[in-house]
Image 1 (tube, rainbow, N blue to C red):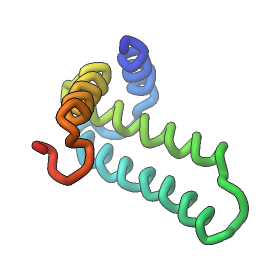
Image 2: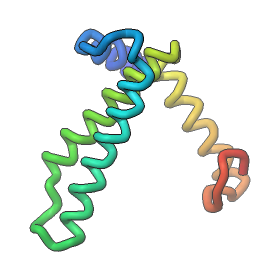
Image 3: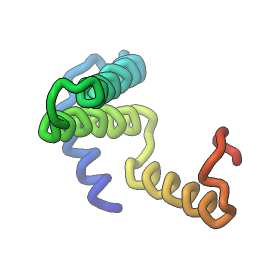
Image 4: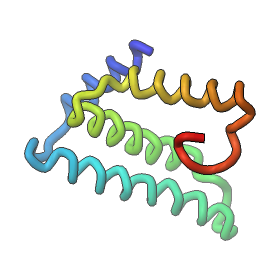
Length: 105
């Protein structure tokens, strides 16, 4: 998981927003970039040609950047966030609770 922390540090070196706007900038940027991923998928299903794999990789990279930067702003290590997620999913899998809704299932 150390690759996540290296990515987080390098990603942060490219941040150019005012620090006092960190959370708002990261959350709105994350929403915007996630919307761009959804738009590319929607265009594929609409029949506007093949799946834009390169475009999706770029947009997913932007999503990753905003997740890393939001984690930095909140004082979280990206590797811890990733490991916590994997632990949560493994627990759900073991309890046959991957389907359903709610964080505490």
